[in-house]
Image 1: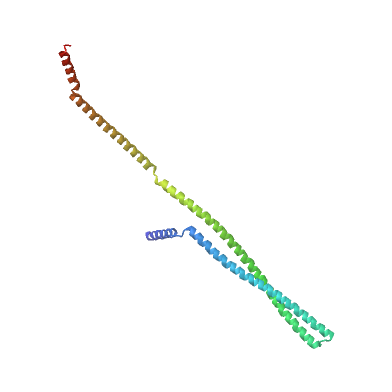
Image 2: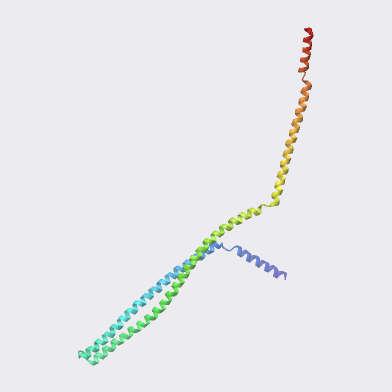
Length: 232
């Protein structure tokens, strides 16, 4: 049972790895648009070819219709010549029949061309719908691609900002501030200590100088001696 579970976990890990290795969605969308444009190019080429066949079928129909009418008129003219005695009845019937056969052959071509026209018309309509659908999808995908690119930029910016904000731990910030306060307090105390030491050193020096300073005492003695000399 553990073996199957282990195999399942391995398969799940491989599936996640495959998903992680998937191409960037923007690149996939761009490739999809390129594929659709290739399909559009092929559809337009096919549409042009079918339209060409439709036009040719219409031209053929007109040509065969003209020929059928022409043979119909020829058969009538032949019979008129027979009626006028300009042509024997036997030859007239034979030639008129040949003309009517040619007429029927061309009429058959007219009917065939009409079938082709209907078929090609349906094909043209279907291809035009496909072309319009492809154009609409390409336009829609291109707009969605623009939106996707904008969303990616915003999401990346938001992700980076959130990542930076997440890296700023409130507790670590408070600890850092407390350490800074402690450091400042320590520096201030150290400055006061140096001040006290400087003051103490200055007081000792002043005391020593006062003891050793005999300038005032000597002047007083000299003044007393001068007064005695002058009898004052």
